[in-house]
Length: 115
Image (cartoon, rainbow, N blue to C red; front, side):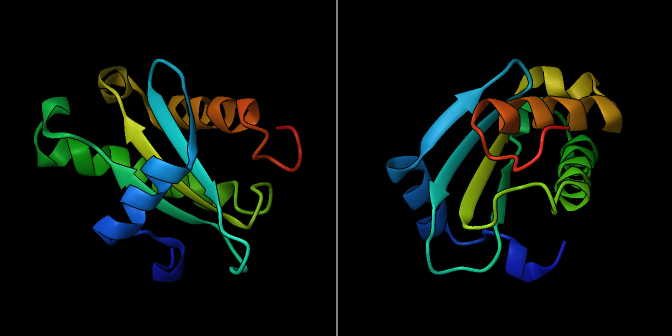
């Protein structure tokens, strides 16, 4: 995922948390906030230390970034997203995590096409 597609600054995370809306399932929490002046969506990932060591946390983030890249054409472009992984996400493989992400995005109407 290109750097232009990532949210890195704490101020940007806080804006999405405070002004945006959220939806969750057992594995993921998705916050989203519309940004009218950008050409593509941006993603911030949060995986807490309670979920495991650095290897586990980085694997979850890698899976989520890959899932967003594969869904890039289907996701509405003018939004900022923050995804928070919950404890059950640790046990998922890539395809299960992608399915969970599609579920959350679908419930929030962020997918332009149904998968």
